[in-house]
Image (cartoon, rainbow, N blue to C red; front, side, top):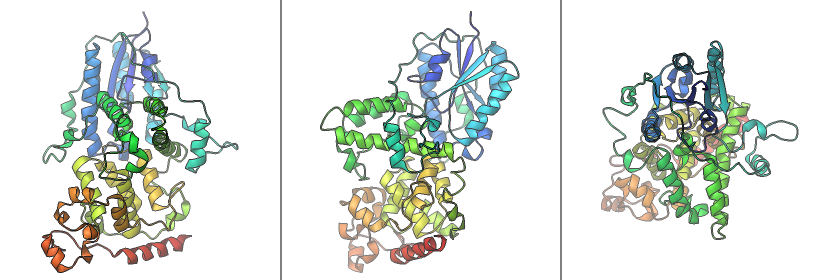
Length: 476
């Protein structure tokens, strides 16, 4: 009989289309384990919102494994030490896992492999979180791409990603008693106050929730995706990002089902746009693989000299949705209430922080890391640098989102702002994104006293824009 093997779950909390799990489940008794290793992650240990999701996702995975006759082992601490101890206890000679691309996780793989090898145990790492592996897509000279369009063109010229595979059948689970933590013991869920009390109304973490989300998107919102994805009040996006981030669904599954939807002529253009958004996810991970300093340092070195401002007061107002710009405030409040923010509004809020307030993009990235259920080191770092102008394929330095016009263009009926900034709900549409321009009579009729129910703008748009352009000009 073959020795037992260990499957080390990481950011791949599913059973379907998981190459490393399929390899592990072949002809060996299988020990599934998840290890919460905050020390290895360091600054990039899961933030508060991600910990909420992680608790729910692990509970769902444990149930999936239990339904198949196994038991998910939960451990907390050093991954190498725990895996080595488990291997010795069970007589396992191999540990399987899925590859991760974050710099700290790559170092973790190296350290774990070294620890295991000291007792004759192999670590076998398989791909599983991307459509295209980062080192496989390079320019003719062997250098990595720095611009999305040629990168994605090169990806699309490669063979189609392989079809997703089903979960392994008839897994022979290891049945001897092994120590395991209680998930509740980890206290991943908020205690007092429970700021995530209503999140179960918005989300269903786990593989089943991911599959349902994908099916509902492809059968409905996809039909208006290209235009609808920019309207924050519209349910026109997939909201798959947290499911992909935690590996509850494979990108190959999403890809294949979108490609099948693309065969419908009425959905062809919409599906192609959606596939390109998957491409942006790939590109962000690609950048982090090739430029591991991306979370800390500007991709464009000139931005080391950018004259960032410092203001705890302004940062707190932005975090709390009290900037005086309704679309910005609506986005920040949606984030706090749901652990999510619409992508169009993410760009506007990020632009406001980095260009209107001229606060460092890392301050915004840190806040998003702690409050987004889909917080991804790759996406978060690349996206914040893109908006700030310091990143790869970045928005031009002179592109400064006007939060007034953005609100009027993409939330024309004011449904989004009125939902998340209800103190302004009775203002006429023409003043909803610029309440400071309303007459005292209009404000009184709407029950709004600027500076009390709703703040005056932190900065004046035109002056802030000119100051930002001058700052950008200083480093050109």
